[in-house]
Length: 440
Ligand SMILES: [Zn+2]
Image 1 (tube, rainbow, N blue to C red):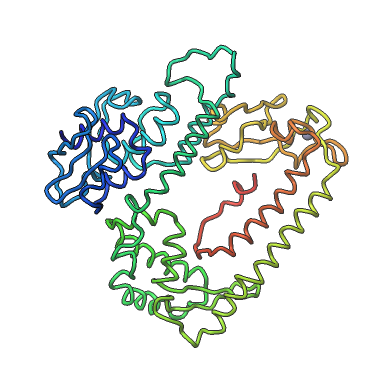
Image 2 (cartoon, rainbow, N blue to C red; image 1 turned 90 degrees about the horizontal axis):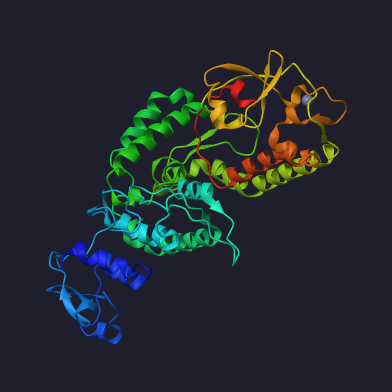
């Protein structure tokens, strides 16, 4: 039997749910020659020096050879290509060129929970996008006795119980990190060759401006690009998928410790040129200690400030309510609609010649793309004292007329989050800010 045929049969027989099977399929294992006889489950792989065999349920559990598998390699590889025809998996609605790893993922995290409902997912999978897709189709569980609505599998509602199975499956996949995303490779364990020379050159070029955070951010950016280029084709790059892996972790460890701002409020920074792997530069001992104190006591104290701001805002705004439908304000916030601001518009209203026009959804918001609009805003509400109208505060806030203070306290939550995030390692970067779009 060929690898492909064997793999698909084992998948159909739910072997993806057996962790031992998955590990024996995608890696080389070593077990006693007779070990399989103690538990001869269907499609159990028996790796021997002369070839990979499996327990064949179609032949009374006798061993069958996987013909095209090289005994010196794992029977299957996550990244090997496979072409599926329509119907070869329950959710393959069209022919698809994919990999063994993707097929394993689909059986585990898509087909097991959702059956035919979610079409085959291929390429690098984004858990967040999958969740967003599921949420769009999520429906309450039909009560027992209720008629289950009939629908084509691809548009049928997805139930909470199915979503929970999906979550279980995603957690189960974490058990295969060693097969798919090895963290330790020769390259991930060291700095890119040539780094010291590049760093020296960049520092030399900017030697008079090394206490300017923007200059250091520029140097860090170049070093990080150099590091990324070095790791581009490495297996370990599949593990280093978060921004933080490069911008913070590898940066401090291998590239350059970077700028330390210490405990004060000033904008000047102290640059520590050594990376942690090169050892401590004892001349910078005070800066490093300041960094430790900033990361421990100081961030704790700042986090407390954020918490205090939340409390203060909650109390100061607790009387605010939405009391009327429309105050009739003719003023609004001038906004240039672009990709960054368009998603904030649904639920708000545009000031028009003779009143206002509500933007019900993202599609409607799209017609203002690239244009300047006057958006009704709580900043211009005409109602007295702490009252606001539903049009000015927008649809979402108006749904809970006495809960405006929860939204106001969000400002404090953002301070809190910023301080807390900073405590967990942050990278120094420069970014362009457009204050006009940042204001809505
Ligand atoms: Zn108003």
